[in-house]
Length: 383
Image (tube, rainbow, N blue to C red; front, side, top):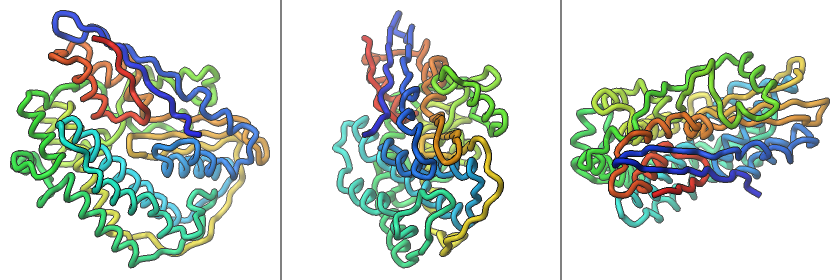
């Protein structure tokens, strides 16, 4: 049964601006308890069933954590295949937001047909790489690449993204973005144009830097000592708060850099980051022959007391940590990207606090929720 839970957001407005933005969220403290006492090698499969959102990234993060605890080293081919599958899941998640959430924000009907086609292709993408379904097996599954089927799958994905995101051209710079959004060929382009027209392009910008690469040893110690779950629920690093996700990953992309320079890291930059990431990932996936090959081997090294995995999932940095006694899990921890972005003093809160609430404060808050895209439902309460 999925265990994601929900985030509760409390709003107050005074003098036309958000005067209070409260977040209640302790969703992951008990989520991993069912894993304690389980055989470590069974955990990745269990994780992929526990979490209905980003199940591929969750399962593969679990596989890596178990591998590091057991001393298993996947081959470069296995690592390339995993990156390919996570890229496919990320494409589907971003496209899903365009088909559903972005269309709703525009008052347009959802692009159900396109989304069904993309889901039909991407949800089962692992079968074209791991035909035996062992994609989350610690050490790596049996890779048997169906190259022709993958080519057809990528052509289908490109067509779907062209319909809801790119249109007849892919904007790669801020200058191209202006004409692209004005043409309004897709849901993504029309949403960008609406944000500009309504003066909301920079709304939600916060002085919260992108999450840097964290020292693995320090991160492992921080999680090991997190007996109350405070770090998992409200993470910081050296007392500082960060944001994670497409905007953090694609900050150096010419399109994203241009939009941030012109409007700040607000709603428009969040949309641009997802468009840029979809463009980059589609090209990388179309070039699937690079590093993707048949393989069924793994290497080994001495086992460790614990294993730490860091994976870039669709919504941002995902961390899994496992402790095991022999083959049995004694502790399992997950630090999800949502906890960074929806920290009680983080990017979402800072993006709203003191900003104009508009005629419909809940709707304006929902815009920023959709932009930051949490991995759970958000319940917004207030005026």
